[in-house]
Amino acid sequence: MSLEVIKAGLLESVQDLGRMGYANAGFPVRGVMDFYSTLLLNILLDNDWNEAVIEINLMGGEYEFKESNLFAIGGANMQAKLNNTPLESYQVYEAKKGDRIQFGFFKYGVVGYFALAGGFDVPIFKGSKSSDLKLECGGYHGRKLMAGDILEFKNPKRSLPQLHLRKYRDWLEESRTRAFRVILGPQDSHFSKEQQQIFFQTNYIITPQSNRMGLRLKGEAICRKKMSMYSDGIAFGSIQIPDDGQPIILMADRQSTGGYPKIGNVISYDLPRLAQTRFQSQIHFKPISVQTAQGLLQRKKYALLALHNTLHNRGIPCF
Amino acid sequence: MREIKPCGDMALSIYFSDHIQDNNEILAFKNTLESLKESAKDDNILHAIVEVIPCYTSLFIQYNPFLTDFQSLSMFLQNLEIMGSYTPTKRLLEIPLCYDFGLDFDRIREYTGLSKQEIIHIHSTTLYEVRMLGFMAGFPYLLPRCVLDFKLNVPKLPTPRLEVKAGSVGIAEMQSGIYPLDTPGGWNIIGKTPLRIFEKTQGALLQTSDYIQFIAITQEEFESITTKIANNTYELSIKTYKE
Image (tube, rainbow over all chains, first blue to last red; front, side):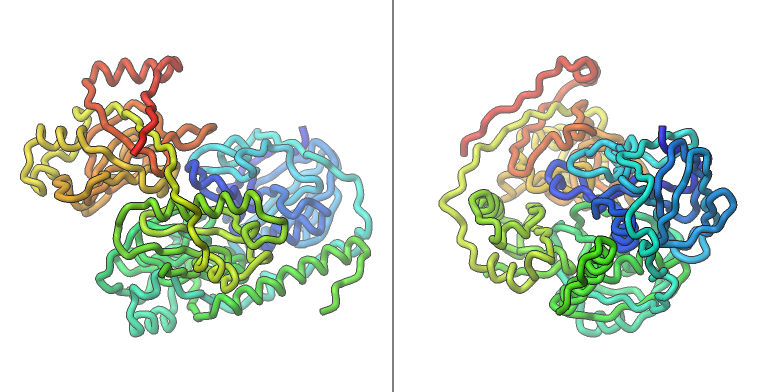
């Protein structure tokens, strides 16, 4: 008996970085929408980087601690409070038995994260603790959290070394840009130069029909050439152009394969910011090479390692 | 020459042809990757590969971008020689199918000019191959082993149904497929199987490269098999198929 759901939010579920390697058995990846916020929280709490967290979509509920533990929140600004005391994102707090955490109206962002030191004692199903909400398996009984649910802490902590260093700036608050970088392919050849130009010059609106499966955009329709298209694999952030020409960006709950042509794929570095972009926002795309995108990822990884090493009193790598 | 395209910065697809053909090359390539990976040293590029998904004309490869990069991996894959001849032991599964639950026979008759009896005869005597699992929950994409002159060729529904029941068998273009869950769907429904082709703890019943034979059953047999499956007493016919 560690954490009780007093009031459930709109869509809260236990997720880790996803279920890899079981697509051929019919199990898609799933996992968190915003891996950057998740990684930051797990590092601050000295958790395994892939430790499961509670992902809170659009509106959160209320939880009661039945057992003390350290925790941190991040991602969207959920205007969260611990017993009426407002909480900052990316800061480690201590909760005692009986304490209640309430998540309010989201000030900015779309997905919030609630991470606990030592993570959750949730069964590992096909290599992952992610909840598959469509197939109803994995994570917390394969479903979203409901009032009355009890979650168990795997390894709760009373304290952590260097507690005063365990904070990070709210990267989302600083992110104002609505430009998202895209690697062309795999079916960029299905779109003429003119159509690709239209795609990169249009301001698309994220419609309210968007969810964990995909972001449905509204804007200038993109037409494709008459070429045969056979179902192939779909990566996180892949931009599909269906018959009506309105792009769909496939996200965490995407299917593994699909038959619509994909003009490009949002780069991993930009995916967390994309997942946090609200409905009715206008976004646009910029082409970028896969080499540059992978260079950006390396930089991100070093930034995370630097945070991790600081908390463990190790030197920051110089390069 | 294989065409390799990035699918973002953590995955890529290798295209083996621009039209549907025999998929031995795709499966042999996957098999080569898996065999080599097993005996590879720790620093080998193969360990950067996280997942390999065979599709109709391509292989989708998810990889760790911190262990390799797109250029290095594509060069490696471009030069990979398929090991030996790949003659896997394939399975032949008999799938009981009650055509009485078909919903779109009128539409299929209209497109093919065939009678309902002829449609059922063709569907239940065709040897189908599982070319890929996808969409969700291991929805099997089935193609006739021999597509030449294949008469059951019907376009998908213009508007998908809001709900197709699990176990429904559909046809679309020359493919056949079985819905593993209740979902919206755009395929022409030709019948229903009592089999559970996706099960939460085990996963998908079918694998890529399996052969399927549909066996026509009556509604009574449908009910009886459903009960047997619920009681765990149904024995699915799975034979070894040698080419």
